[in-house]
Amino acid sequence: MAAMPSDRQIALGLAAASAGLLLGAFGFEYFADLPPCPLCIGQRWAHAAAIAAGLIAAAILPRRRGTIFLALAAVFVVSAGLALHHVGVEQGWWQGFSACTAAGTLGAGSVADLRARLMAAPVVRCDEVPWALFGISLAGWNLLASLGLAGIALAALRWGR
Image (cartoon, rainbow, N blue to C red; front, side, top):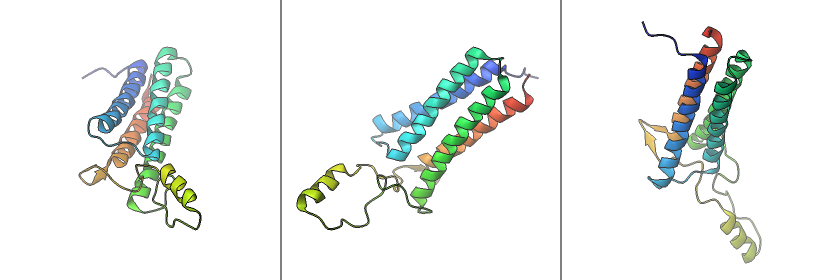
């Protein structure tokens, strides 16, 4: 039977998983020409925070072990919440922020106002799915991964040494 990983290994593993997800997102952006929308950027920040939290956790473990794994789980739950919001926008379950979706009407105004609005409009919309695997968007995969990582952090909290 294989030995259980240490708390440090778990914390580093969680940081590495977030780093992998973040590198994957950058790969899609730079190699598959799929630039991120504003909601994607928020999810990236959550994983950057998870990387930092995992590295800090590995450095200070075993002190405040419970707080550390609870904080890591919370970061992943936030990431999952951001991803769920993004999936909901993609699926039309709710409306995204005005910076993420197409404007409903242009409204009255001068040509200069219209031009300014068009120039300020985001290039990438959050309510469109540019890529999916098995019918699941990148945001959906991030939701599943973040929930899994939160589960690992909570399991480490419960069954750790």
